[in-house]
Image (cartoon, rainbow, N blue to C red; front, side):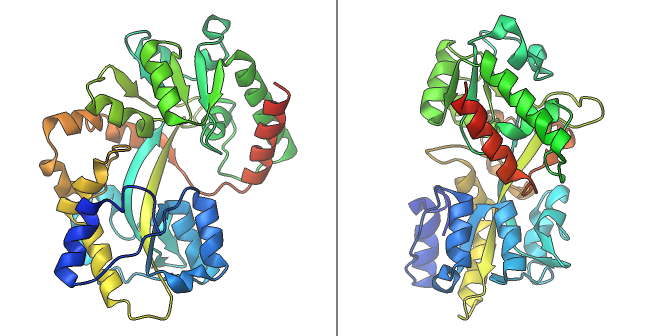
Length: 332
C-alpha cells in the first residue's frame, strides 16, 4: 500500500526481476483512509505500507506494525543525513522504530518571483493584507492550509488546544477566507494560476507544489518558510515513511524491499517522479542528482527550512480544526 510514485515501474521492476516476485499495489489517495483500512484488518493482506509518517507511527499503538530493529538497518541509517538517523524520534513508539523515512519536504508560501518578492513572504501577513485581496490561493488539502495559518495566529496546532486557541484558529481562517481569491483542491489548477499571475501565492502546499514546476524550467517559482513569529516557528516539515506490517508472514522479502526503497539509486527515482519531485533522507543519493534536479528540489535551502519548521505530526485537535475549516468555508 503506497502513495503514487512508489509504484513506478522504474522502482518496482528491478526488484521484481532480481527476486523473481510480483508486487501487488494498492494506491493511497488519503493517508487517514489508508490507515483506517489497515487497522480494520486489511493489514493481513499487505507486507509494507508507504504513507505520511504520522500514520506509519500510529501503526505501533494500533498493534499492526512489525517494528524495525535499528541494528538490522544500521547500514541504511548510516547513509541517511544525520537528521534522519536512529533513533529517529518521529517514527519511534515505546523506543522502537515503526518504519524508515522515505521522502520529505516543507510547507510554506509558494511564490512566483516574477510577480512578487520572496522577502514579502517572510511572514504570512500578506494573506490578510487588503493589498493582496483576491490574489491568494488556499489549497483545500485537509489540515495542510490550516496548520501554517494557526502558527501565524500564535497557536501551535500540534499541541492540545483549549477553547480560546480554537477560537483563534477560527478567527485566522475567517480572515484568510475573506481575503482569498480561491480555495483549490486540484494542484494543476493551483499551479496554473500561480504561473499566470492569477495567484501571487499558494498557501498549504510548499515544496510539494514547487519542485516539479522548477524542474520544468519555472525556476522563478520558490517555496520558502516564514521567519519565526513571537518565538514560534512558522514552517512545517512533512515526511513520508515506509513500514512493515505484522501480517504473520515471513518478513524476509519485505525487509529486503525496505532496504531497497531507501537505497541511494532507488531514492533518486523516488524523488523525481512524473507527478512531483521531493527530497529524500539518503545523503548518498545527493551526489546522484543532476545540478538541475538539485536546483528544482531547492537543496541549497532545505536545511534552512528544516531549522525553521515544526515537524508534522497528528494534531490532537485535528477534527475540531477541520470542522472549523468547513464551517467557515460554508459561511464564506
